[in-house]
Length: 536
Image 1 (spheres, one colour):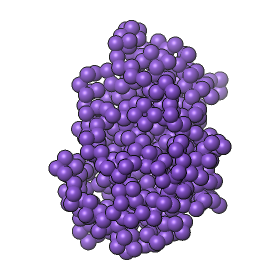
Image 2 (spheres, rainbow, N blue to C red):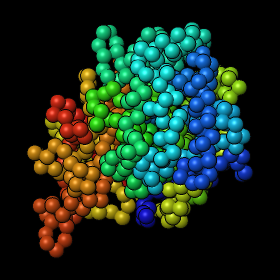
Image 3 (cartoon, rainbow, N blue to C red):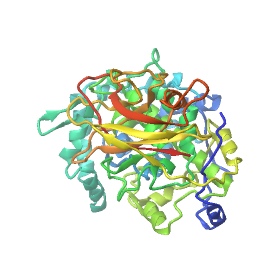
């Protein structure tokens, strides 16, 4: 797929100054380990090694730092989402765990295969074999039900909690976990006598994964979020971070990686679209509303072995973006010294090494390059396409975003005639509260008032917004999502404008934007709080 590229730089002066900005190498010159596509012969061989390691780690005692479920709690206790540490934290998490899996797989060359969901919008068939699926007999002795899981893992986790140092406790306080009981509330989905099955991080064996060998495909809307159009749009920004999220590769800058999505959260295209929606689809958001969901829907998602294939692909796309930047002679990290320092010095204090010791002095800066773990990727979607983008020699001026207005939860914004490059829409939305509230919402564009549900191929369909994870303690859940405007909706809006005629579409059109629950629930509503458009 070819994209004409506009607005790479704010001015030609930015190009001249780029040579003085951060240009750390994206990868080692000769990597020791190769992450292959899960569908390749090499990737399938790695999956067999992976299955061996998963089985062994599931069988480790719960007080062992390499116990499979203990590893998932590292993510549960420390994972960032909706901020600019999303990529670098997960790189460190996968990197250390890859070394551990290598140890238990008996394969000295093991590296995580990546699941390229743009090429294959369904779970690879091998991920339904044996210990590679959390609904298997391998998991049953520990995850039969919540009572079984609690008796198995809670005493060991409480013992671990009691060993945490002051710096680790500070990180957990930021997250809302000032006590072990508050942490455990999010395992069970219960707090102060009230339970929300959708917020239960634990998943019983028989409901640990919604997608199955008989039903392996991502739903049509999630597949759209993984499509070439969406992924390539997500690779277009030239800034690692930009306060205008439509021009930022990463999500919003926050004071800590443990600040959970709240009122100022802004999701970049790749995190908010393929990342969030793949998680929700595999965990059963929609078909299993209002919960309980499978593992992938909440923060114990690494219990499902497919998590690591999904995040290997997210990390691969970061690597694709980085190499695209280097080909263009553009910086791969923030250019402001203070911003780069803030990004790099952020403490990551919960990772576990392959020798069983804890990484108590980790910083984000340790993981900004793939060199730390000596791996590289075999080519997948985005490599050749980003090379085409790099050859486009962009020089157009960046235009200011077109900001819309909002009335009674419905947004209105002006769309110009079809540009030669993608248009990104930023939509701020308030997450509904309460038990059983929907997590996925469809964006309707110029849909008649009576339309409350659309298919992915509808001209009224503007994309899907998905909240990943539970509503955290004391956190507001307003968030801004960025997503590419579908060409069908773009064309239909111009064609249906009052100024259009039989000879030609209109030069501009007004987009009316509203949200409806993807599952069609008549009891859940989400209001648009702000909307804007940006041509990239």
